[in-house]
Image 1 (tube, one colour):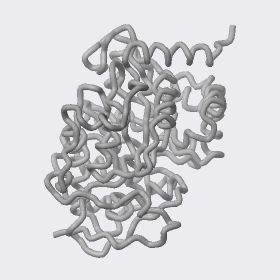
Image 2 (image 1 turned 90 degrees about the vertical axis):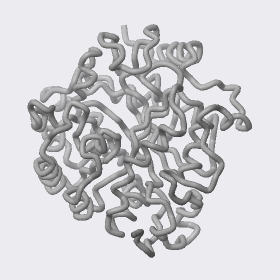
Image 3 (image 1 turned 45 degrees about the vertical axis):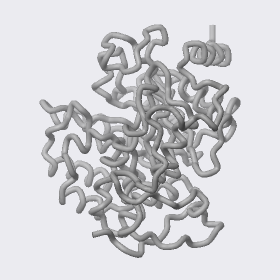
Image 4 (image 1 turned 135 degrees about the vertical axis):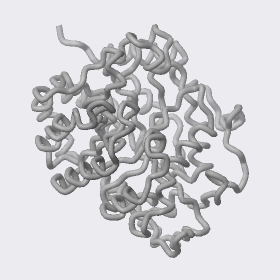
Length: 392
């Protein structure tokens, strides 16, 4: 018998609300920032630098050119977080209006709301998959639909949120188009991105997650055609390999790019992971350059503090690379908004994933940190300000 997705969805959302995994619907804006860990109400910004004073409206094309961006006096941190998870793998999430205060305090004006496509078993009580080996983390619509409800329930006029579909099971893609039709019915026109989807995420293999295969990639054609027709970007997590075999999975991800060259694909974390922290940087950059040169619609995101932990600071090799491909990079934190986290954690992740911005050329800084690449990719009616001075 075919699954009635509406009934399944209603049960899933009810379960989330009953177990406390969804934010409380009685939350008022007046108390959202008064909890422990709330952002400070000072003029000091991320990392002790200047605090952003630019509003969402200042980026709107309709309002005309914004004042130029002085890199010596304004923050180095990105105004876009193109890789953000407002819900954890399981357990309670930070409340929406608390997150909004984090964005206000850091000057982040544009955010991609990625669900967690592989939700942990609700009955397990687990919030992080690596703490719960053997507990299934399986594809689900749960996160996406709660995200959609919260964005409608808690609007914020100084923040642009892009909703993303993350339910897709890339190992078993047969029902993906049908489920997108459900999204169209329940949230018409609201979901403008797809991902983060896991092609190969080694860290989840211990939680029964199935990676994509060469055979399953060929079966993506129907849903990739739909994404292409709607000009919807898709962010893919695809590990390059591991410390023992740094390029083990390169053929798998190249199969994706070769099969769908006309899709807007974003390769998350530049293919890095906790399992791959010792790859030769020259080899890494060489792989990235070859992929970007061969596939014009491919972009990379530099989200996740694992990049900083692996390389410490991005050295001259990466600065040169980003400056050479300034229109192919997106910023992001990969912050997962579990209820146990606070503003200091988000501030830190934004800080370390943005530090490379300090060394970028003015062109790369404008395109990456100030959002021009993001606006063009989505066709948004916003424009990054011109840069009028480089920080020392």
